[in-house]
Length: 414
Ligand code: CAO
Image (cartoon, rainbow, N blue to C red; front, top):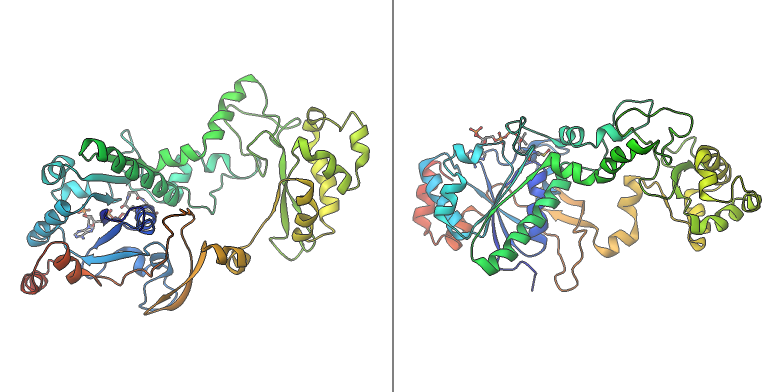
């Protein structure tokens, strides 16, 4: 049995944020019915295509374990079918531009009339306020949620990160909101509205930077590279590779850095493991020297400390450094390239990286479910072709017969 078996999701999501959410719910066993516009479908099917006329990896990697139905929700018959799907589902999930579902004739009030048990979940760029009508993509959310202003180096411009914290991050937030609302519905019998703004999701993930904003009022942020010689303004600055926690950390070069852009390792000089680290790099003298022996003494010269550590790491590969420092309990991690992650056997063994077969593109690699439930294992099933399950869903879920489905098809509603 799967954890969400019996839960049916009417999936009106597209691009990345919403599909991330419904893909997770599908991995937990929900029946996710993706409704797409006839003819075109989710725009990502045709974006960043690597093989002509074949669903892109952008689409396939975000829409596993779902069924696809094509339905024109602006067509009268299409709207009637959509209404019946709302009656038959537990959750409606969407991430259209603000107001799109209302413009189709499905306001929250109308949805509650059709099915008071339905949970109506949405991702939008912003919550209520001056920007509520704006369309938003990933990097806009990273900029407006505090990610970009706090990422990068002090002397450089704001930077966005490779991790899709605006899209996939907000999808994760929404998934939690949906299962929480399902849990509450068990007790009340009623659905509710679940809303996640991408700005809010990014800010939530940047929580420690708002912490630092308030700490600034009480003096410089001593773990930041700007301390002690640089200047602090009135807002949380970019912290380079400094650790966001109370234990100093930095990225240092390893053997081969001159030609390999990922020959680096992150090292955290946690106080409890500092003795071992100092001895390993040949600086046991630090332990006897009051200028170096305490965390407070080291704080004003973290740059010099990491430069010394780097003299040692530069002579070893990032994996050799891991092998030496791990037994000493020094928290550290090599900078892994996507190539290395794709080939990593342990990630294959746990199903975090999996190969999937697709009828049109053949085998491809994807990220499986990163959340492991012992009693509800996730099996990754390829993404659906556009409209692959239209007849199946209309018959099985709505009880329509073959003539009704054909008629809707002739009308252009499906
Ligand atoms: N039948 C008929 N019409 C359909 C349909 C269907 N099955 N599915 C979608 N449509 C219509 C919508 O109703 C909408 O029409 P109106 O503009 O007349 O209301 C239209 O298709 C386009 O929807 P959209 O405005 O959401 O799409 P877009 O490509 O212009 O914008 C995006 C995309 C992502 C910017 C916007 O949807 C958005 O801001 N979403 C919220 C934030 C979000 O999730 N962003 C993350 C995106 S991933 O980086």
